[in-house]
Image 1 (cartoon, rainbow, N blue to C red):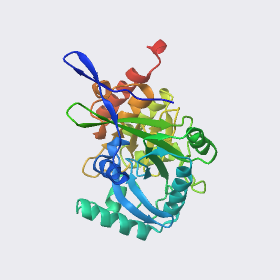
Image 2 (image 1 turned 135 degrees about the vertical axis):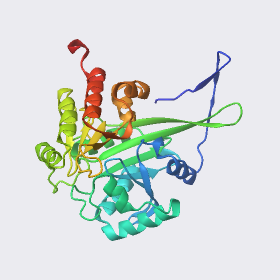
Image 3 (image 1 turned 180 degrees about the horizontal axis):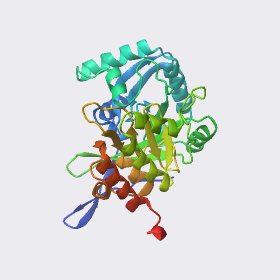
Image 4 (image 1 turned 90 degrees about the vertical axis):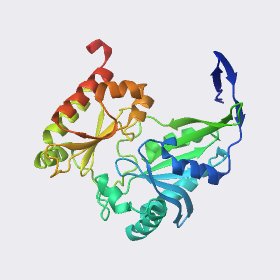
Length: 326
């Protein structure tokens, strides 16, 4: 069984921090709601205690590509039953009518900010609020303080056979000498997830060439093709969507390293929006965010012209190219 030890170095001496019990499930909900980067940077929460046919879902979010993120939280160990509960919630979310989903999400967003709407958030991510033409893709996060033996095996089997993207996150709390609470996070995720994990099998994916052709039509073809060419050269996996291309590590093709949108921007001709996921580069390639920024420039949401696309592509080659090819 894996355990985490945490020390704080004070006056050049390590002082061990003591493991503390986590708060109630509602408190964990609140922490993740206030900072969803506890799970993954770039998530935006669009619902809390969402009413589904199978019961109330702790949290619902969108990721930077507009995929739905279902978050189920337990204040104790994740047990095998949580898989059945999460799949039930996912099936309910998959079938939920768009109007009812929009109603719940918009009510939540109004209570939080008063400005954002679900339609606007989806459109920012290149998704159609009504048709969701790429399918209502669902990513499942299971959050707890640990997990039962065999649960990771079950999650891997679901990813391989049922094409479900399930990520387990365990949180541990420690108290320092002043009584402050520190959180340690571990992400447990299967590798070699299918490229279509989470996508409805009945919804055909567009081809990369079709999306690149759309980029040409919208005046951002050079930018998108520059990034696409670098990604293919480096062996990354390309995941085309209706209005974007996501690039993922070959070890897990559901995780976004970066994504570029191909939409026309009348006020910024020749400029494409992109999202660079620093956390994924660290998780899969052990590249610190500071090193990533030094190589490619700003991360998270960025606007790239041709010079910017060439800078990002060159930086990725320096970071990811095999050492014997340098």
